[in-house]
Image 1: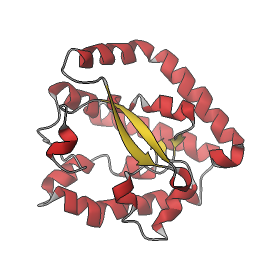
Image 2: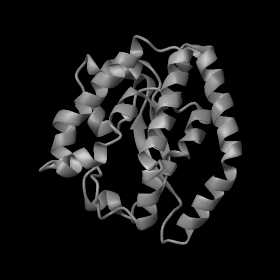
Image 3: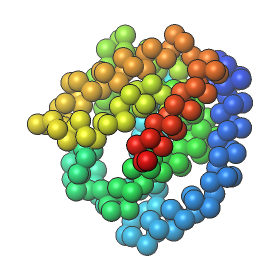
Length: 206
């Protein structure tokens, strides 16, 4: 059982306990966001196929931050100033509140609280055999690449071709950051990364 959950029962128990407690504590916030999105046309949640442990695919959950049909309007990257993002969506993204539904993905076992960023299947196809080592652990909400690339939208906005820049450069830079996690992961490391992520979000908003 535990081999299918990244091989560390302590990590899985930590994921379940923290994500369940967070969902309970944040339930008023989750409800308020859901109601606010409900008043705009379209679904409250956005679902997208991502890749995690051993290449398994799952539907990642996010609060919807774009207009309906955004996937058909442009590529699968979103630079700063993306016109597909709604005003409420910009607020949610700034506070990383759009990611909160992924706590349910953690409870389900799709994701971990900490791990490599889950990519979409088309981006995973671009990875080298060495880079595909990130698929030997379960993807996470937070992780080295998520922390290191908090300015991703701004970097993409400065590129002549945001989609091409992500595919040829940023994707591989993010994977290199996450590969470092594989050799040092531990419960203490996970807790440290979570604390650093929350502190980084707080610093950006102060």
